[in-house]
Amino acid sequence: MAEEDVVPKTFRALVESADRKFARVRDLPSYGRAQGQHYFQKVFKAYMRLWKYQQEHRAELVKAGLNRWEIGEIAGRIGQLYFGQYMRTSEARFLVEAYIFYEAILKRRYFEGCGVKDLRVRFKELRFYARFLLVSLILNRTEMVKVVVEKLRALIDDCKANFRETNFKEWKLVEQEILRFINIDTTFTIPSSRPFRYCAMLNCHPNSVPYVARFHAKKVLKFRDAILMSYHRNEVKFAELTLDVYRMLQCLEWEPSGSFYQKHPAEPKENGVAVDYSGASGLIDMNLAADMTDPALPPNPRKAILYRPSLTHLIAVMATICEELPPESIMLVYLSASDKYAGTPGQINTSHVETSGGSRRTRKSMLTSHSSLEQNCSATESHINGVKGPSDYYNDYLWLGPKGNGGSSNLYPGDIIPFTRRPLFLIIDSDSSHAFKVLHGAERGEKAALLLSPLRPTFKGPSSADITQNGSQFTLFLTAPLLAFCQMVGFSLSDSDMEVLNSAESILSTAFSKWEVILCKSPSLDLVWAQVLSDPFLRRLIVRFIFCRAVLSAIWPPEGSDQYLPLCIPQLPNSLSPKSDVVQSCVRQLADHLKVSNYFHFEDS
Image 1 (cartoon, helix red, strand yellow):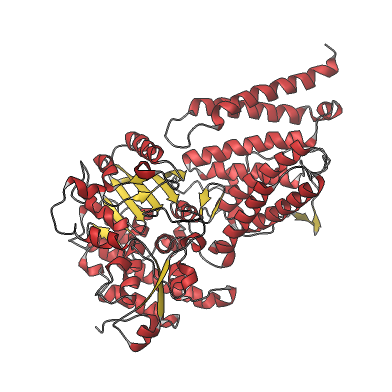
Image 2: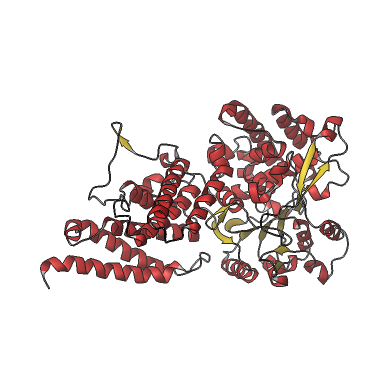
């Protein structure tokens, strides 16, 4: 073999070996603590060896005909592997590493200049943009998302012009998905808004820190694992990440404080001139992640993200995670779905209701709600005090399936009971959520913590009530309470409202701090809540639930408002009920500050 043939043949052999290993791990499930970990180590090692080899022999490989897009494809595979590991472990460093590789591919223009005639390469470039968009979206790199969206749009138009015989309809749908997503996501519509992730500086209230630090229940559980699932027709999504799951995903992660997460222009410049990465250099600093992550932060809880799973798949995932749950740990399960097939695509059922009671100004405001089956309301109410029989666990359900799938797509409350042998923190966001309160008292080992959404959301304007357009109101209250409040009353926030926004956030922060202290000091706090109160993520969800319930209680009069209010089971202390002074004063102060008090009725102290 000629000496000049050794390098390219060795390179091709390394590529084939790495690709074979990649194929073995590409379709492994993204849940479970030990799923294919051995194979992942092998495939990472193979691609790192391949990457190092092409760096050391770049000149010989280029001379032998190596294309720049081939280098980009290798880097893209490595980015894919890192992102896959993030989805399996929720470790921020893997997400950052994926971003580093994808950003390098973009800046070094590996896919550009390869000729419009090569359709195969054009498809590789389209897939690269789609993957990079997903990583940038989860990292909240808003400027980069905008840059990549424009490049994706331009590439789709170019492909349609040069490959007229090929249908690019699916890629046009991808473009429409991401545009719809960023037009609704508050990170893009309100750049000054606070992050969804848990920020130690913003979410750790100084006044309540000593009480939380000293608080110790008879039993303390660690929050280690979560399952996040959403299943609605036509809901806002990008790829397999729906808007509600995206919000909840970030709500259960730490906000790193590294400089990497500061907002800055996507295109790098040196001395005012854009850097040109189109040359032969393929160096990517693979140690940057160490400087871009915060080692002082605890690990994120693992999250299994399920997009439109079958019922059997959901149960299988819950069983796997429940089986692998470490001792003295709790599993969070977030389920967002409708109670029935929603009709033809795009069909939205809404009804207008007028508030009664309170002031005359309140009566004049028209509130809109998303409708659900009327019989669900009365059926679930019958289980409050009565003795539950076996049929009570299989009356109402969440719908997980296409039209005509029958009972095989129904998730009943009884299906959850086997998983109550381990500690369970269950969030149900549905128009049949109250049906799941029958789980209380039916647990098989551990009492479950239940946060159940209202059966109908409440909005000032009819357009906001469409979950397929704006995401769930209840989920938004749990992940971004101020934004949920403003959306509900139709208060528009923009960059010009910075002072108003900051003052409103300060009102909430002060109230949440007081409520945390009350929770820590309350002698009547149920053990179910006490054993998770030390966890910052779960404590924040509990406090935000209290706010959500108080806001909705202040809008609706006591009579006939049950379907518009969320439920928590077991009950939280009466000192934090919607009618308590310390809770109601927060809602009153916020409403006065935003000048929307006419939508509420408050009881005089």
